[in-house]
Structures are given as structure tokens and as C-alpha cells.
Length: 377
Image 1 (tube, one colour):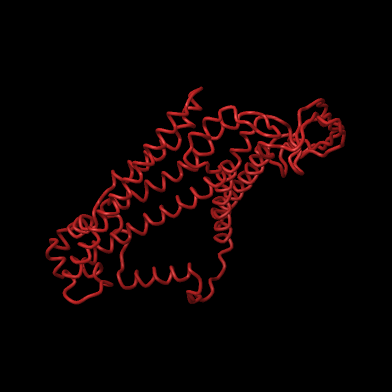
Image 2 (cartoon, rainbow, N blue to C red):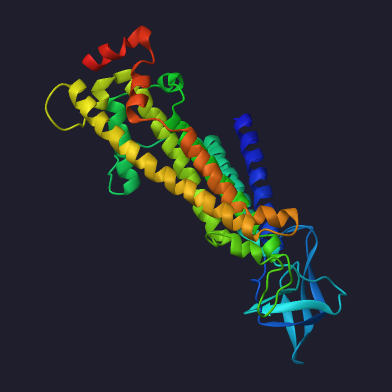
């Protein structure tokens, strides 16, 4: 009991630290976009102190009221969010973007906001889930009777399908561990890693492009970065889509490994379970594999050609526009690098369906027999 309570305490402490880190990151990357409505200078009149630990994260921060003199001569009192100004400051360059007042300066911290919030938020979510589980373990409530799965939602339907598959075609963790690393599984894992790389690289590639103060009509100091991009994907969209796809591909890789374990354990009977037509399982399986191989060759040719064409086009645009410091070159070639990696993943993990099945059916000869024996079973 004491050990579970200590673990819950440690999880809870980590969760609190993660929340404070999230608040700190949110405060440090807050602000308006590259284009603002008004510009002027502010002189601080009064401040309220927060910290060194507060709802705004770590550090001594101040929420201040300042007198702002705008460029057109108007003067007003404005309240600035904690962390923008400090007591005693005068003639600080500031801007207003809608209802947001901020200190004027380079825009790039705001560009990194989606990435920073995603990383800090994910850490807080994991630690929060761990804290909840640890608290449940401390309380150890008496479990009620198991509730039947209704299957009314999509997630419920998927759980029911998974349970039926495990009931009809059972596999154990040992079965999954014994399966060789298939190229299909490797491809899904690499695609998950590639999506995670997109989440990291796309926002970072925007930093040189927005490394300049705000303006009524913002002009990038390195406009060639925008000209080099195939698709001008906003950092927030890259983070959200990349994260979703990374999780999806990782889940698919786990499911593909489980499916491979069922093929190894149950042989052709599992493969031919849903195949239409008459005849033996071997005949139906061979007909299906012949069709899949033809579709695989066509799909490989089309997909490979598209990936190579996109990578070449991105490289042509990137090298044609790149100039300036090394960071700008990298930003201009971001699309080319990512698409080249994607094409490399695709071609390095090619494997026909029949080749994959043949490899699995001959995995454990000592207990399952030869491939011919399996197909005849």
C-alpha cells in the first residue's frame, strides 16, 4: 500500500511539473501573427507580480498596465498579459493584433507554438493518465460486473472485432515475438517515424522565414523559402496531421504484426477464411495472391513514380530558390529532404504479398512443417 501511494505521489508530482511546463511554454510563445493592426511604444504604469511558480508557469512574471502611444498619435492605457512587460520599462516597442497586445519583435516564437504545445501537452497527458491509474491502484475499488460491449460506436465495433478474432484465431505474446520483422511492418513503423519527423521539421523550417519584426504587411526576410515549398502547410496543421498519422501508422504496425503471428500459427486456414469461391483453401489462396501481386505491381509502379517525381520537383524548386545562410538552405530544401526520405522508405520496404505469405508460412518449420504442408492443411 505504501509503495503504491509513493508511486501515485511521484506520478502526481510529475503531472504538476508537466502542467507548469505547459503553462510556461504557452506564455513564452503567445502572441499575434506576423501582421498586426497598430504599432507604437509603451511605458509601464503599474504591474502585478506572479511567481516564481504560478498559473503562468515558472519564473517571476508581471501583468502590467501601460500607457501606449501609437504611431498615429493616439494614446491609450492597455493591459498586457503576464510575461510581456516588466516594471519600470519605458518606450518599449509594442503592437496590437485585434484584442492582443504584445511586445514587438521577431515572429518566430509564435511559429513554434503548435510544436511546443504539442510536446508539452503530450507529456502532461501521459503523466496525467499515469497519475489517474496510480490513484486507482491506491484506492483499489471493488470491480463491478463486466459490462457487455454494445458495439454501438466505431471503437466498440473495433473492440468486438478484435475479441472475435482472438477467440477464433488466438495468438499469444510469444507468437507475436517469434514473428520475423516483415517489410510491411517495418514500412509502417518508418512511416510513423517519418510523420513524427514532419511534426518536428516543418515548424523549425519556418523559423528563418519569420525571423523579423511584425509589420502591417509582413515581409519575410527570406522570401525564397516560401517560393521553394511545394505546399505552404501551416505549422499548426503539420503538427496536428503529423501526430494523427504517426499514431495511426504505429497502430497499424502493431495490427500487422498480430496478423502475421496468426498466419504463422494457423497457416492457410486463417488466410483463406474469408476468401470467396469454391475449391480448397490452397487454391483459393493462390488465386487471391495472384490478384494481389498484380495489384501490388501496379500500385508500386504508380506510387513509386509519383514519389520520385515529387522529390525531383521539390529538389528543383529548392535548389533553384535557395540562397543565404545554411539555415535558409535547409528550409528551402525541407520538402525535397522529406520526400526523398519517404521515397527511400517506400522502395526499401517493397515486398509482394505472395513473398510475404511464403516467408511467414515457412517461419517455424520444426512445428508447422513445410510451406506445402501448410497450404495443404
